[in-house]
Length: 95
Image (cartoon, rainbow, N blue to C red; front, side, top):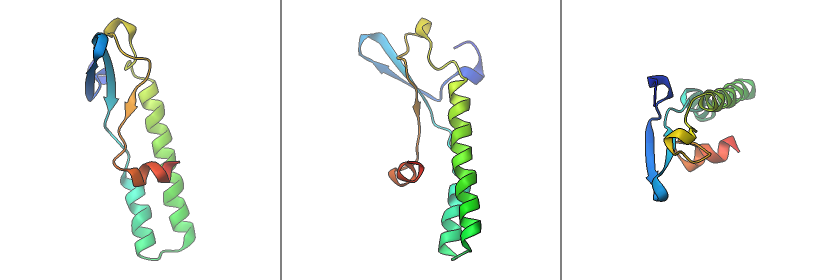
């Protein structure tokens, strides 16, 4: 890719010479703070604050990925991008 900001973290080579790009940076900090608040039996407002900020972080990251040149027909990419999620628990939490 032309610029380093548009270079994916990982590219999978697929059959028919297609490429699938993946971004592996994930905003996990506020999710961990949310879990700590649960473990420490913090008040509900603090838990909700961390939850809200974490979901905003995820949406911000999705929008950043959408703005990158990860889908590029000239580079033989498929028409979607993968975003790394650290585990199924995080995936379930987001959904």
